Amino acid sequence: MGNPQPREQRASIQSNLDGAPPAQGKVLPLLYRGLVICLVVLAVILIGGTIYGISISNAAPARQDHIDIAEKSGEGEGQTFSALGRIRLPTADPQPGTVILFVSFIYYPDDKAFSEELVLRIADFREIITAYVSSFSSSELQKLGEESLKDELLRRFNAVLRLGQIETLFFTDFMIIG
Image 1 (cartoon, rainbow, N blue to C red):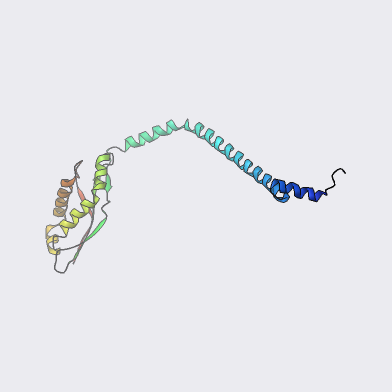
Image 2: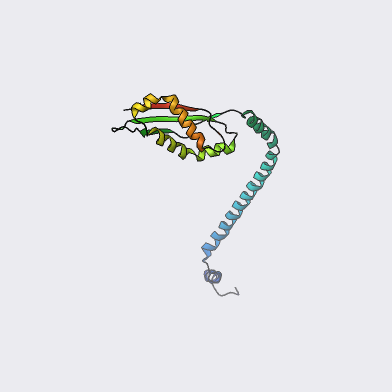
């Protein structure tokens, strides 16, 4: 009994020296332990994932061979370019009718430069269709016929293309209303 201060008073003096009340002093070490445990778990997951990824990457060359074979088998096959969408145009009649047109054509995606040019020219193609088709009346378009219209649009499309040519145009939809 060499210390005349009661226990409670010593605890409050000690907490004042630490800067925190005694109850909060127990919470912080638990919080730090929880954070350390979370960090250890994350480190184990990262290391395990890295080891798993490295072991799987050894099997990747067989998969790459399969991709190369698939790409080689697709050479020379054409695909339908239909990015122009359905176009609705007024005719040149005093009481305008409507022309509904869906233009598509075959292109070869292996020719990357030409494929990119086609995508860049979509607005030009739509403008060509609009300018040409809208210049006719309904009766003139019917007399002109679908084949003549395709031929002229094909000629105009190919006139703006620099890296390749379109062989044939297709009209999925072609209606003259009015």
